[in-house]
Length: 430
Image (cartoon, rainbow, N blue to C red; front, side, top):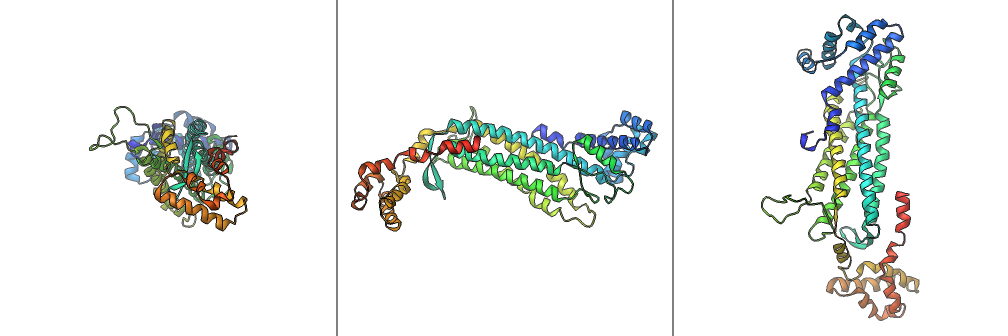
C-alpha cells in the first residue's frame, strides 16, 4: 500500500524486519523443542538462540541467486550461528515457516483492526447520544419517508460495527493457526510436539490437519470478513456524502482552517474524506475474490496462492486500518446542522405524517383501500402545489366525517415517531 494510505503501526507488521524476525522466532522455538525431544543437542539449541540473527540485505542478495526466500534466510542465519546452524529447520518445510508467520501477521493485523473498530464505536456512541432526539427526515429511495432522529441513524451504524467487531474476532481466531508438520503434513520427519511448542510460544492454535500448507478456506473467510467490514465503512461514508450535498446540507465533514476544496472554485467544501473511504473500501473488497480462488490448490499444495497473499495481506489490512481510523475522525468531527435537518423535515408541508393519517382513518372505520385513496389524493395535491398538508386534510369533507381537526393535529406530532427511541438505544447500547 502506498504511504498516503498507510499507518506506520500496521505497515510495521508487514515489514521485512517483522517478517524475518517471526521466521527466526519460529525456527528457534522449534530448535528448543527438538532439543527437549533429544533430536538435536541442547547446547546447539542454546547457541542457536544466543547467536541467531539475520541481515536483510544479505537475504535479498542470496535470494537473487537461489530464487528461494527461506533458503536465503537460513543461509544468512547460518553465518551468524556457525556450525550449529545445521540443526536449524530439522524436518521442516518452507511452508511451516511461511504459513505460521502469515498466521501471526494476520492475527496481529486483525487485532489492530479490532482496536480500530473500538475507536469507531466509541465515536459513534458519543455522537448518537448527543443527537438522540435531534429530528431529521428518514429517506427511502432517496425520497422523504418518515421522521427519525439523527441519533437513531448513528445508532444503526453502531449496531452494524458491533457486528463487524464480532466478525473480526472470529476471523482472528480462524486465521491464528500454526503448521509445523513437514512437507505434506504427515509429521514424517518432525514430532508433533514441536508444532505444539511453537504454537504455544507464538500464541496460535494447532492446525488440526494441514497438507503442505494451512488450508486456504481459513484465509478466504478472513478476507471475506474484511470485505464486509469495508462495505460497512462505505455505507456510513456514503450516508455522510449524501447528507453533505448542497441540496441536503444536514451534516458535513469538518473543514479545517486553511483547507481548500477546489483549485478552481474557492467556495467548494467537498466530502473528500468520505469519498476517499468509498475508494478504500473497493481496494479491500478487491482481495475477497482472489482469496476465494486460493482455496482450490493442487493436491497437497501449489504456489498460486502465494503471490496473491503477499500483495493482498498487507494491502487489505493496511487500507482497512487506515479507513477505520479516518472514519472515526470523520464521525468525531462531523458538523451537524440541526436547523437544516428541521427545515428539510418540514419541506413537504407535513406529508411525512401521511401514514399516521392513514392508520387513524382505518381505526375510525374506513377501509384501508378507501383511506389510502383519500390520504394519497391530498398528498399528491400538496406535493404538486405545496402548502400545508394538515390544512388540506382539514378541508377534506371525507376526512372530516371521521376525524376532528384536533385529532388531525395530534397526528402531526413528531413525538409519536420517537416514542421508541429509548427502547432502540437500550437494545443497541445496553
